[in-house]
Image (cartoon, rainbow, N blue to C red; front, top):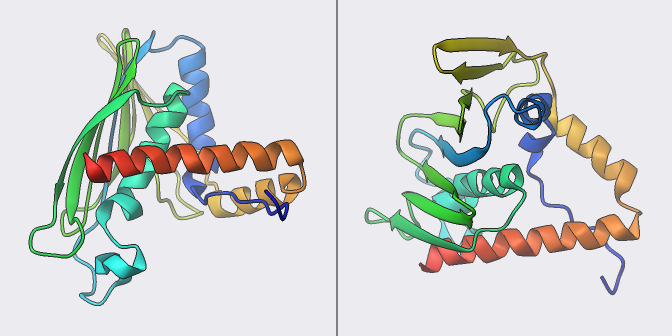
Length: 206
């Protein structure tokens, strides 16, 4: 803040148009009241020298993959967790290879997040509401030419919506360049980074 530098954490996934579509479905009452958010993000084995396996380089499944699931849960509930419980497994490595976290947002809203390395690729989230469920099979990492699908399920009913391709990296860059000189934005972005850090620290040290 002293040097008026804009700090924006690069969660590019949030700029994909599919998430705005999901929010519209929720806002129009398609699944009733959202009560549970569940997400999975993880990868098959990487090169043994990959920085993600190095503690000094900021490695670990939580900071690399799990942080996306935490960010998404916070943003869809538009709230901060009031407490959490987590399990992290190092499996002989210096950083966690996999983990899960249960977040309590209060008001009967919870999130169960699973993340990891050295497993079958997973990249999805599910939002469970009182009258329906929304599923994204490709939630956090998508090629710019990929047509994703949003699945809406209600009792005895299932609809699939095909989304137009979207380059979420480009959308994020455009957003930043249009807003980085705004003082109010700089303050909000800084708070966002700090709030994300607080819950990640709680998961790591639970």
